[in-house]
Length: 488
Image 1 (tube, helix red, strand yellow):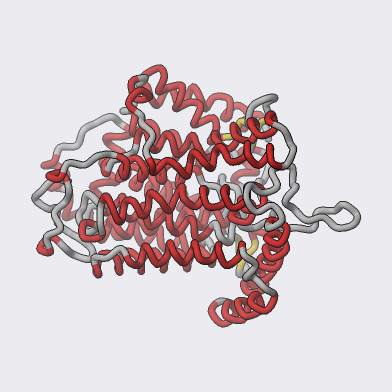
Image 2 (tube, one colour; image 1 turned 135 degrees about the horizontal axis):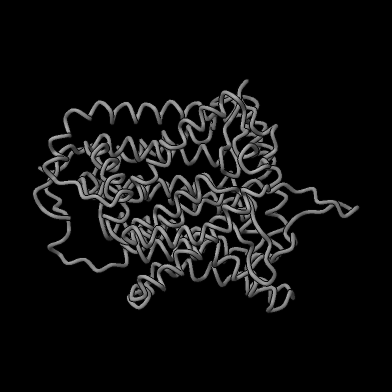
């Protein structure tokens, strides 16, 4: 990494403090996470005795420090809730893994600290600041703006190859051969991998389509800029007066995101977007949470199937044949290669099924010469191998518990057509799709962990009966266009 990269990383914590000094705290959190994730270098600075200093750890440190300085009472207001149980287990699990493998308490506590910084802090900050419909709406709009900001950068790298990270920070976070897809280039921009860019653009596109169909996309985008960035208030009369002329611009924004998303060349993300659109339609049209429950059970069933040894060579061959018919031979061969590695890794993981093998690559497979011959492409197999079934299911619970709590307890599908609920409901679907992606890829995206924390905060918040949206059928539309007369 060059001097500019180090300078940006070092100056980021003071920059976060500046955001908190100039913006309302909720908006400062969202803006800090988005700018860091989208534009800071994908690098780490090793520090003795503490987790590596990365763009996301710097963001979390900066927000926690800013909260202590500007908003200390928010810490006092925080209360643990049953919905937080998976996150607590997930953060403490490395200590049990280290102790059961004889690695000692120091190694376990170090791993706990690293796990807490990577996963616990973004979740906690989402829980602290975004646990409301309005907070999740602002995050959803921020993700859409993040997708729009990436449009020219993605198009540039599609044309010239992934070079922005190299030009600006002096190195590429990914090997160049993985950026070549379908006779062209797959952009990386300032993320870890092209697959991560694909999932990010998928999330932004899905959220933009949902908000556009609800008729509030352009108003929310403009309010985010004018209120969140410039500190100006937009009157309701101006918003209403500007609604009709800008509807076409909102549609152009959606089309722009969709076209760029296609050009990103991430086949798996294509299927995720289609599944997400189908889920939103089925839930809103049928006014039932059954599609959400079915996907959650399907994901859980897949983990049960694989961790118990169901992924045999015969089944891998059958899966490869199906994928060949749906996609192409290259994608089928790639998937078969991943599944074969996962078969070997799960076989070893089952030797230490409860808390896993711990760190230091102990869950990997080595040949007789001591060479590592395993390839871990999926986040679930990494979690299962290192932290066992306790770690794997607690990680799943970080996302599935808030999603199901939102859909079954807090805002049932009969309310998902209301304008106040649409952004949070769509974010819950995005999180479900992210979990699905983690079954085949290992892309840690702290923005989604932040969203999971916000969703958990919404589930944990007590709601008076009069504050719930009406479930009257007269307010229902699969894709709403008018604001209901009651408050949400």
